[in-house]
Length: 182
Image (cartoon, rainbow, N blue to C red; front, top):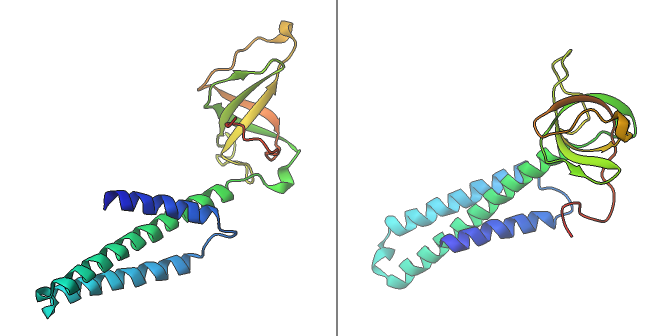
Protein backbone atom coordinates (compact mmCIF):
# COMPACT_ATOMS: atom_id res chain seq x y z
CA UNK A 1 0.00 0.00 0.00
CA UNK A 2 2.94 2.34 0.73
CA UNK A 3 4.20 2.13 -2.85
CA UNK A 4 0.74 2.88 -4.18
CA UNK A 5 0.52 5.94 -1.93
CA UNK A 6 3.91 7.14 -3.19
CA UNK A 7 2.76 6.56 -6.77
CA UNK A 8 -0.44 8.50 -6.05
CA UNK A 9 1.61 11.48 -4.82
CA UNK A 10 3.79 11.44 -7.95
CA UNK A 11 0.77 11.10 -10.25
CA UNK A 12 -0.88 14.07 -8.51
CA UNK A 13 2.18 16.24 -9.12
CA UNK A 14 2.36 15.20 -12.78
CA UNK A 15 -1.39 15.81 -13.11
CA UNK A 16 -1.05 19.33 -11.72
CA UNK A 17 1.92 20.11 -13.99
CA UNK A 18 -0.20 19.28 -17.05
CA UNK A 19 -3.12 21.54 -16.12
CA UNK A 20 -3.44 24.86 -17.94
CA UNK A 21 -4.77 26.62 -14.82
CA UNK A 22 -4.48 25.81 -11.14
CA UNK A 23 -7.52 24.17 -9.55
CA UNK A 24 -9.81 26.23 -7.33
CA UNK A 25 -9.61 25.70 -3.58
CA UNK A 26 -13.38 25.21 -3.33
CA UNK A 27 -13.19 22.25 -5.73
CA UNK A 28 -10.31 20.67 -3.83
CA UNK A 29 -12.09 21.15 -0.51
CA UNK A 30 -15.38 19.67 -1.76
CA UNK A 31 -13.62 16.64 -3.27
CA UNK A 32 -11.76 16.08 -0.01
CA UNK A 33 -15.01 16.22 1.98
CA UNK A 34 -16.70 13.85 -0.46
CA UNK A 35 -13.88 11.31 -0.26
CA UNK A 36 -13.78 11.52 3.54
CA UNK A 37 -17.54 10.91 3.68
CA UNK A 38 -17.28 7.93 1.32
CA UNK A 39 -14.35 6.52 3.30
CA UNK A 40 -16.23 6.87 6.59
CA UNK A 41 -19.37 5.28 5.13
CA UNK A 42 -17.44 2.33 3.69
CA UNK A 43 -15.87 1.68 7.09
CA UNK A 44 -19.31 2.01 8.72
CA UNK A 45 -20.89 -0.42 6.27
CA UNK A 46 -18.14 -2.93 6.95
CA UNK A 47 -18.38 -2.59 10.71
CA UNK A 48 -22.13 -2.39 11.38
CA UNK A 49 -23.64 -4.75 8.84
CA UNK A 50 -24.03 -8.41 8.23
CA UNK A 51 -21.61 -8.19 5.32
CA UNK A 52 -18.88 -9.39 7.68
CA UNK A 53 -20.12 -12.95 7.18
CA UNK A 54 -19.91 -12.68 3.40
CA UNK A 55 -16.20 -12.87 2.45
CA UNK A 56 -16.72 -11.52 -1.08
CA UNK A 57 -18.58 -8.44 0.14
CA UNK A 58 -15.98 -7.89 2.86
CA UNK A 59 -13.17 -8.12 0.28
CA UNK A 60 -14.99 -5.68 -2.04
CA UNK A 61 -15.43 -3.14 0.77
CA UNK A 62 -11.70 -3.43 1.63
CA UNK A 63 -10.73 -2.81 -2.00
CA UNK A 64 -13.08 0.19 -2.21
CA UNK A 65 -11.60 1.54 1.05
CA UNK A 66 -8.06 1.28 -0.33
CA UNK A 67 -9.08 3.01 -3.56
CA UNK A 68 -10.70 5.81 -1.56
CA UNK A 69 -7.54 6.19 0.54
CA UNK A 70 -5.45 6.47 -2.63
CA UNK A 71 -7.84 9.06 -4.06
CA UNK A 72 -7.72 11.02 -0.79
CA UNK A 73 -3.90 11.01 -0.88
CA UNK A 74 -4.09 12.13 -4.52
CA UNK A 75 -6.37 15.07 -3.66
CA UNK A 76 -4.23 16.08 -0.66
CA UNK A 77 -1.12 15.98 -2.87
CA UNK A 78 -2.87 18.11 -5.50
CA UNK A 79 -3.79 20.59 -2.75
CA UNK A 80 -0.21 20.75 -1.49
CA UNK A 81 1.20 21.15 -5.01
CA UNK A 82 -1.37 23.86 -5.77
CA UNK A 83 -0.39 25.74 -2.62
CA UNK A 84 3.32 25.55 -3.58
CA UNK A 85 2.58 26.68 -7.15
CA UNK A 86 0.50 29.64 -5.95
CA UNK A 87 3.26 30.60 -3.54
CA UNK A 88 5.85 30.49 -6.33
CA UNK A 89 3.67 32.42 -8.79
CA UNK A 90 3.06 35.13 -6.18
CA UNK A 91 6.85 35.56 -5.75
CA UNK A 92 7.67 36.85 -9.22
CA UNK A 93 9.05 40.05 -10.64
CA UNK A 94 6.52 42.79 -11.22
CA UNK A 95 6.39 44.03 -14.79
CA UNK A 96 6.71 47.64 -13.56
CA UNK A 97 10.16 46.83 -12.11
CA UNK A 98 11.47 45.11 -15.25
CA UNK A 99 14.68 46.77 -16.54
CA UNK A 100 14.56 49.36 -13.74
CA UNK A 101 17.49 50.05 -11.44
CA UNK A 102 16.56 49.26 -7.84
CA UNK A 103 18.74 49.52 -4.75
CA UNK A 104 18.25 46.26 -2.87
CA UNK A 105 19.96 44.63 0.12
CA UNK A 106 20.61 40.92 -0.43
CA UNK A 107 22.51 38.00 1.09
CA UNK A 108 24.62 35.68 -1.03
CA UNK A 109 23.19 32.19 -0.46
CA UNK A 110 24.80 30.18 -3.27
CA UNK A 111 28.32 29.42 -4.38
CA UNK A 112 29.83 32.10 -6.58
CA UNK A 113 30.52 30.96 -10.14
CA UNK A 114 33.30 32.76 -11.99
CA UNK A 115 32.23 33.03 -15.64
CA UNK A 116 35.19 34.95 -17.00
CA UNK A 117 33.67 38.40 -17.41
CA UNK A 118 31.18 38.13 -14.52
CA UNK A 119 30.25 36.40 -11.27
CA UNK A 120 26.95 34.54 -10.98
CA UNK A 121 25.34 33.55 -7.66
CA UNK A 122 22.02 32.95 -5.93
CA UNK A 123 20.89 35.61 -3.44
CA UNK A 124 18.04 36.18 -1.00
CA UNK A 125 16.50 39.65 -0.98
CA UNK A 126 16.46 41.13 2.54
CA UNK A 127 14.23 43.69 4.17
CA UNK A 128 15.12 47.32 3.64
CA UNK A 129 16.97 48.84 6.61
CA UNK A 130 15.03 52.11 6.68
CA UNK A 131 11.49 50.76 6.25
CA UNK A 132 11.91 47.18 7.50
CA UNK A 133 9.98 45.76 4.53
CA UNK A 134 10.99 44.18 1.25
CA UNK A 135 10.45 46.12 -1.94
CA UNK A 136 7.09 45.00 -3.37
CA UNK A 137 7.24 43.20 -6.71
CA UNK A 138 10.75 41.80 -6.27
CA UNK A 139 11.09 38.02 -5.77
CA UNK A 140 12.58 36.74 -2.53
CA UNK A 141 15.21 34.63 -4.31
CA UNK A 142 17.15 36.06 -7.23
CA UNK A 143 20.10 35.13 -9.39
CA UNK A 144 22.66 37.92 -9.58
CA UNK A 145 25.07 38.39 -12.48
CA UNK A 146 27.77 40.79 -11.29
CA UNK A 147 30.01 42.14 -14.04
CA UNK A 148 33.68 42.13 -13.12
CA UNK A 149 35.43 45.46 -12.86
CA UNK A 150 38.94 45.85 -14.18
CA UNK A 151 41.53 43.81 -12.28
CA UNK A 152 43.15 46.81 -10.59
CA UNK A 153 39.81 47.96 -9.06
CA UNK A 154 38.66 44.55 -7.71
CA UNK A 155 39.08 44.93 -3.94
CA UNK A 156 36.43 42.58 -2.53
CA UNK A 157 35.71 38.91 -3.00
CA UNK A 158 32.16 37.60 -2.97
CA UNK A 159 31.49 34.75 -0.55
CA UNK A 160 28.33 32.90 0.55
CA UNK A 161 26.76 34.47 3.61
CA UNK A 162 27.85 38.02 2.84
CA UNK A 163 25.26 40.78 2.86
CA UNK A 164 25.44 43.40 0.13
CA UNK A 165 23.42 46.44 -0.86
CA UNK A 166 23.62 47.11 -4.57
CA UNK A 167 21.81 48.81 -7.41
CA UNK A 168 20.48 45.95 -9.52
CA UNK A 169 18.63 45.87 -12.82
CA UNK A 170 15.93 43.20 -12.57
CA UNK A 171 14.97 41.10 -15.57
CA UNK A 172 12.60 38.17 -15.82
CA UNK A 173 14.27 34.88 -16.77
CA UNK A 174 14.20 34.23 -20.51
CA UNK A 175 15.52 31.53 -22.75
CA UNK A 176 14.88 27.97 -23.79
CA UNK A 177 17.66 26.49 -21.68
CA UNK A 178 17.35 25.34 -18.10
CA UNK A 179 20.22 27.00 -16.20
CA UNK A 180 20.56 23.94 -13.96
CA UNK A 181 20.13 21.32 -16.70
CA UNK A 182 22.26 20.16 -19.59
